[in-house]
Image (cartoon, rainbow, N blue to C red; front, side, top):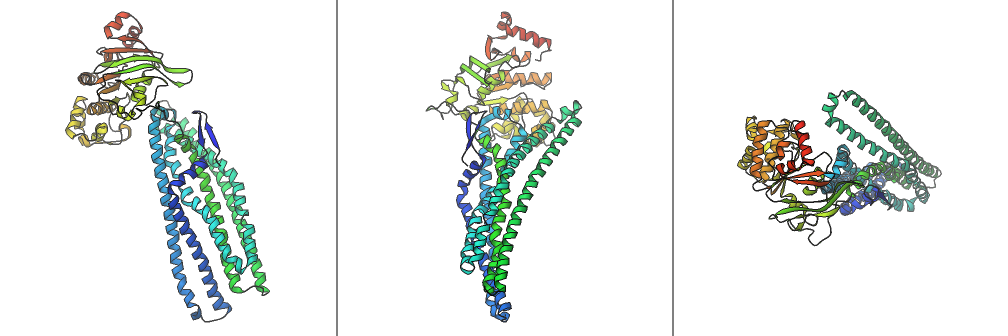
Length: 594
């Protein structure tokens, strides 16, 4: 039960899904215990109800007394019914609250851990699979905590309570119950072993199908253009059909197990009934006690049958928890353990220094190798190089998304890896080549990094980014609601909103991944002027793909194979006739765009 498996990608020991699920219940142990106590109270009332009914039937039919002789029993029964219904509701409601607490906490932990892992991890995972885990995966755990765990306790407590009352009045039936009861969980576990394997397989298929379907939806435009949509639809159809067949195989095993459990319970009840019937016929047993035991016999096996039903909730939860465990136990890039581990980055830094920094996404293939460079404050630095030269990796290191595997990054005199990364990220504004706009108003999207900003400050930032004019032309202006990923505006307009977001944050360091992409020449010139003004009191690192973006930079860094091979101004690098001069020829040949 406590075996662990090793994730070969990260070389870390992970608990099994079953162990992980059990460990989560400690945070709601008292709530679950209350649900179990309520269920057990309902069990005692059930025994009392059977005794009342047996008394009424025995007095009225066997002893042939008038109904008035049983009225004191009959008046109690409606109260028992109502009280039992209330206990059942309270028990289920309490168990649901416990499950809700665990689901809410797990989702929070997953979100926080994914944030800590950063874009580098999410880039290596399929979005659909992660989304399925966060939504359906966590949701699949509800029945495990709300139904399976309480049932597992009641399956022992209620039958034992019934046996306590049955043994004194009919030890034969009690022995039959005691002897047949273990057969039900035995066969349930025997069949459930195969079902557990099928459930895990089924969950993986669902995650893969969700990921594939999301990929297709996101790339629908590309599929249409290349006439591949019908072919992809056929693939989706085949994947869905394979999932349907595997679902039916799981259901087949589930129905088989239910049939076996129902058959065993029915046969056991029949044995008890036959034995009681024979003894009543021969006068060896009093009717009151025989009828009382006969009423309790189905209730004795009911928790065992419920366990068989809810056992499948456990199997589904184990299948869903497999990916949850994998995510939560993926190690977060850890900073060196120093006393300054939580030290805030000083905002008055004068330079950023990379000192012999190395990073590799795969062993033996370094993206950056022994890189050393200095980025002075309040300067415009252009980063150029061929695709795969390490520009994006350098920006990710600077953004704190990934940590150097060798060397160190210093912000002023502070080591970035040993400091509070969040305090550093608060000093950075980032404009990627394809900015992400969220569902919400234009005002909310621009004020993302500074939600306390006034409306006038937002308008001023939009003016600097040449976005104010097109925003005012919209029917609702700054209150215009955008769809997911900026749906409703053009790519160039989305780029200007991202720039306005950066201008509003007014950070000491601004990283622009070709901020003027998707813009016309006039807008590009306006933004370039605004960027130059911004550079007077901020450090700009521009990942450049266009020639006109780099010519006015204070310093140009030329990257090749993860290292800085040249640095200087535009004119000095051209005169050197090295790598930069060759890149400029490529820029010109491509009409100014790489």
